[in-house]
Amino acid sequence: MRKVTLFIAMSLDGYIADKNGSVDWLAGQEPDYDDMESYHEFIKDIDTVVMGWNTYHQVTTELSPDEWIYRGLTTHVVTHRTMVSTEEIKFTKEEVCSLVTALKQEDGKGIWICGGANIIQPLIRENRIDRYHISVIPTILGSGLPLFPRTASPVGAPADGEIKLKCIKTQLYNGITDLIYEPR
Image (cartoon, rainbow, N blue to C red; front, side, top):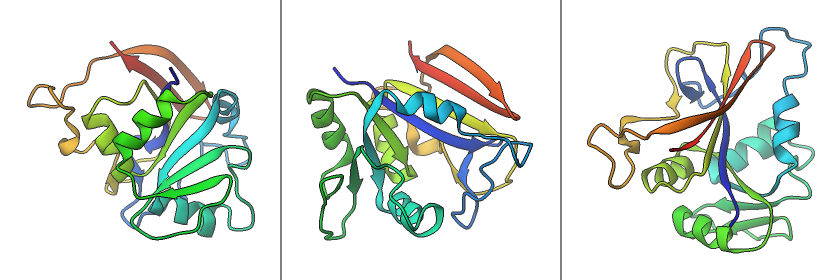
């Protein structure tokens, strides 16, 4: 069965976007350093991306407006909007947990949960994430969109939302710390 990985960056204080929804703070401590080394290793084992409308919109309007950066991967964009799908980008109104369950049954490589919070939180609540790959950026935002809000308690978890994980790997580069966990 295919593995579902949440691969995401967060600030040191736990935010995936600042209070305005921006991710322009996503960089290590040295401005000219290539911060993509863990991404390049990770993406080798991925052929499917799942994201929400806001993430899709941010990628296509801010981060890479001139080129689709996930070329060669099948991307599923969960949205209530009616959009025309292409061979590589499939727009769907399907509930994200059902979509991911169906994708896991298909042949292929890994499934990347790219963002945003409305996609991530239901998957956490229903224990649908097989691996957490979190890159901690050396920035404290003070406020913004948290990766793990209090409402993220998984089904059947204790009232405090505890999820027990085991550390698979850590890595440090340019002040960024990658933390890779799987459920115990």
